[in-house]
Every structure is written in structure tokens, then in C-alpha cells.
Length: 152
Image 1: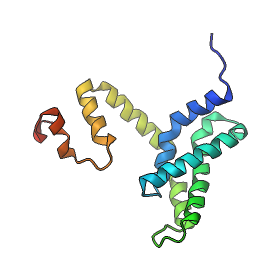
Image 2: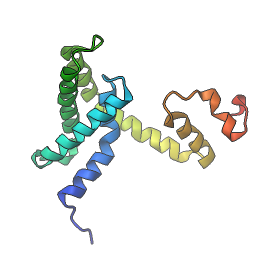
Image 3: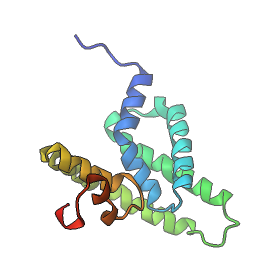
Image 4: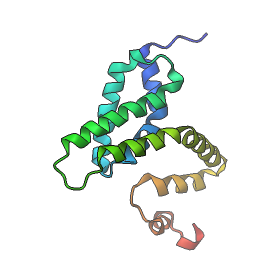
């Protein structure tokens, strides 16, 4: 027998499921990892506060990306003193295009996950390691495995 989820559990499940998409949307216009994390945190808080207004959980990702858009603009306005900032029109354009591509990105991620599941554990770990640490050079991957670059 299934126990009905309360709103806390439903929110956490939906946020966990779509966090990568939301974060990617933010990262498409924000360069610094620390800023992305700060905006993601703000987005999560706003989503939690407004969660009762979400009528259809199948639209959670799109709803979250709209909230992210406003939080990005708010963040950008607060940082307006910096010389190197995208203007609001460009940010809106990038995020609108990203929202249109959301179904395709979701499908692509599902296909990638299916492909990863087909790999043997050692190969899967290698692929995940290559993408886990931002800025890691692929040539540095073989060292901990005691392998040469050509055998990886």
C-alpha cells in the first residue's frame, strides 16, 4: 500500500529530481560556481515558499526555471556595479531558449544515464570521475588507476 506523500516530501523529491536542470539553467548565464550555488539556494527557498501555488507537478522544472530567472535577475541587479555583466535582455533570451530546450535536455540526460548503466563499473567510475571535478584534465585520470593515457 502506498502512503500518500506530504507536501514536504513531494517538494524534496521534485527538487532532487530536477536540481541538475535548474542548476544548468543558472549556469548558462552565471560563470562563478559560488554564485551559481548562491542563486540555487535562493531559488530553492523561493520555490519552497511558493510550492503551494504549483498546481501540476509535471511542470515543476519549467516553474523552477522561471523562478530561477527572476532570482538571476535579482542577483545581477545586486551585482550591477561589476563591469562585466550580461544585461537583463540577454539573460532573459538565454533563459527563454533554455526553457524551450528543457524537454530535449531531459531526454538527453535520460539517454546518457541509460548508457552509463550499460557500462561495467570500472568504466562507469572512470566516466563519472572525468566529469565530477570541474577543470580536471583528462590526462590526469589514468594516474590514480595506474594506467597510461592511451589505455584509458
